[in-house]
Image (cartoon, rainbow, N blue to C red):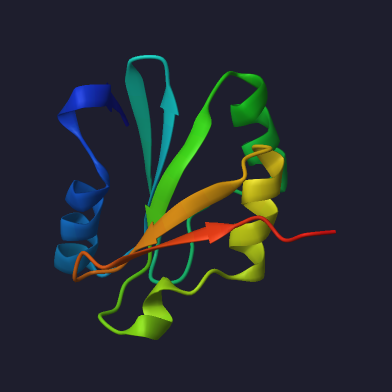
Length: 108
């Protein structure tokens, strides 16, 4: 869904993840945010879709992982690949508890 930028933030997605047990991703373009609901282990945004979002002017705002411990905010190889598509230096992962981690792109 697409929502006004000021109407949703990563803490909101963290709360949704706590309630539903699934991942959410958020992408920002100008004054709107695109929210994508995933399942327990991923969001259906692959490299091809990420590149299209980037070309359309979206920026990766962050995503969530279900869970309450430190491991739940560790980036996956897929997280790094998506970050690379957006040509961003870093992104954020929130867990179900509202804890977050900022991770940086991998160095070459």
